Image 1 (cartoon, rainbow, N blue to C red):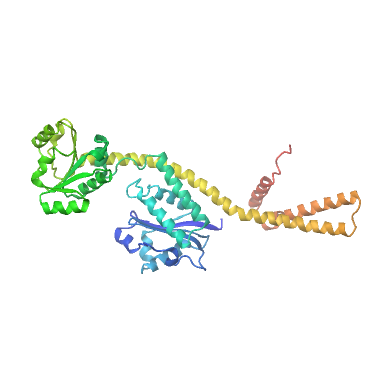
Image 2: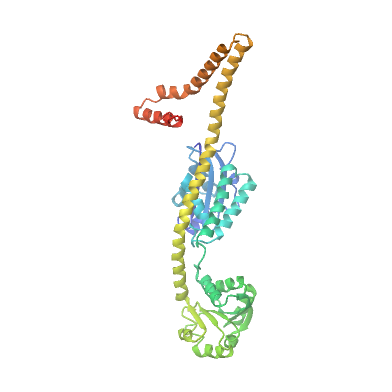
Length: 430
């Protein structure tokens, strides 16, 4: 092949955040980076820049040290030297580059295995590169294949299923208890980061009536404005236990603020309809004995973390299936790639054979026009001579190559075997 696919990049595994920030290429095109111009051996390029990775995907001429060219341009653009970026980068060529791209798009190379956000980011980078005119035949085909592989993996595996964050695990549990979250009411107690995330997930799942309380009412109002919740005073907390179906707690209290008696009173008023309590606080906000009450489902941070770890293990198992799909799809793309490279050679080979045949035909036609050939015997002899000359001239190159160009006997035997196979010399005529 006279060109190669190359990926040069750094990510959350190879570079700390300060390095990723330094070498970020947000909204930068390959032309701005200087890797594509009239004299560049790089024919196609795309830049993917996110908070967790920066990757430059290129197609260029073989033997031109494309990776070094990309790195030098990248470092220079960021106002740094080659040596400052080199320790943090990785480079993949051809099949490994294709496999890496498929894995990234499928979420297998993400900080959280199976996360879907990266696929959208790759699609955005693809659209930008198309707009800038830096994507042509190879990368266009490769990116289209990348999107279909990612879709296939998400369809045929469970790589994106099962919650792998504490906040999302809480919401998945809530769905099991209340299948229709849109008709459920929820209450956020406190303002811990994970509790806020869990609240946001619940809102995204359709919970429309959502209350929030905090020891400081002004803080409750501030958070209510930010998340579009309804603020209530902390003194109303125990009254609202009877009114809501889901409670998320994350305060800084050193002792439980919700005790067994509080929940018992609320359950009586609720007529023992189920209530789901997510205690993400450390120390815990809810007395563990609350879990013994009928129709009360209490989960603390350790319960949720255990679910997350179990789900991560399941995703890793699904990742093995995904890698098998990727291996097969890399093979399929390689077959297309080889055909793409073969096409010009096949065309040139056919053109050369046709040129030889046409020259010999012209030579014979001159004899016909001059009247030198008239009888059937003469026509037959001329056609035989025409066929012989065409075959000799077509085979002249391979024969000369075997006789004079290949000096090593072992290689000569290999080429002889190859030619015999190509021309089917050892096949029996039927």
